[in-house]
Amino acid sequence: MNTIDTNNEFIANTYARFPINLVSGKGSLVYDENSKEYIDLGTGIGVNAFGFSDDEWKDAVIEQLNKLQHTSNLYYSEPSTRLAELLCKRTGLKKVFFSNSGAEANECAIKVARKYATLKYGDYSHNTIITLRNSFHGRTIATLSATGQDVFHTDFGPFVEKFVYANANDIEDLRKKVSENQCCAIMFEVVQGEGGVCPLTKEFIEEIKNISKENDLLIIIDEVQTGNGRTGELYGYMNFDIQPDIVSTAKGLGGGLPIGATLLGEKVKDVLTPGSHGTTYGANPVCCAGAYNIISRIDDNFLSDIKRKSQYIYDELKDCKHIRSITGLGLMIGIETDKDTKEVINKCIEKGVLVLSAKTKIRLLPPLNIPDDVLKKAINIIKEIIEE
Ligand SMILES: *Cc1c(COP(=O)(O)O)cnc(C)c1O
Image (tube, rainbow, N blue to C red; front, side, top):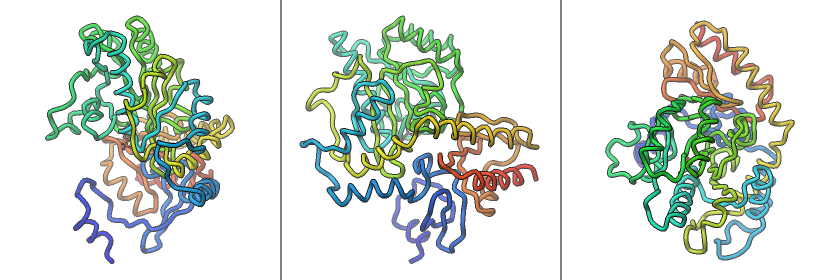
């Protein structure tokens, strides 16, 4: 079968794909149908946290597969229970709702915030959620509505009401938007991933804290991309002095299997009640067994190694010809060059390195456990291509 042609005929045309057909991988390396080897610095967009077919993760998944693959949420089950306990212990948040994707984790966060406000005020008067311009929260209609980028909205209206966008890192605009609306929450990414790997400033996050306290707003942090070790802390917010009320996450959590999680703090932990929310696949035992393995391996030593690798990449690239800026945190890195990004990416593919883009930047989301020599080889190739 010619996979590329058959795919183009039978799969909805929603992705601008590169013309490579990936067939197998191990760790940070992946092979196409012609056995060409690539170093993967994209991890399926931050999903394969420990690379391809990691042995320990695979053992955990297979062990669970051999017991049972799904139960429904009508019954109790150990894998989701111990994963929830681990996530709560590591974050200080109190309860978890499991789903299957980032968008779904955000849908839950939005529903919880709205219900919290409805219970508090007795009506729908305070249901506005402030999100940021340049944010990305998902592709469902509600999470698209929360997303502060017009490019994703085109043709899909009408949208869900009561999302108001404030400029990222603009304290005055945030204060203005909060004072003009009757709000229940502020929702944001600490590093805007799809928006171009743009971190929020410490000052802005400090102000979110103040404004939330003054107005009793919930702090919802979208950790779908920044979560699960990616930024050098277990969750991105842990790089800052802030305690969220709700954290949504997905991508790297499952190590390659689909899982989303919405973590609920003290204020909102009992907002959801039987029948108020649910999802058939949620808390899938196989996904949860894999996720438990991933989260339990992201300990302090591992996190400091992520920071060390991050510093290595930054040091290697910071003085390169044609590089304008390097942004991000941990192993979530944006590279702005004065070259054509698409061209750089294609040359990287040619030389056997897979990288991502975010807006006009080159984006790196390498496996968190990428070996030093493999990382070095890949960074040297990228450097050569950008500098030439
Ligand atoms: C990828 C992403 C989402 C959407 O996740 P899906 O699993 O694709 O639904 C939401 N928020 C952020 C910050 C993301 O990076």
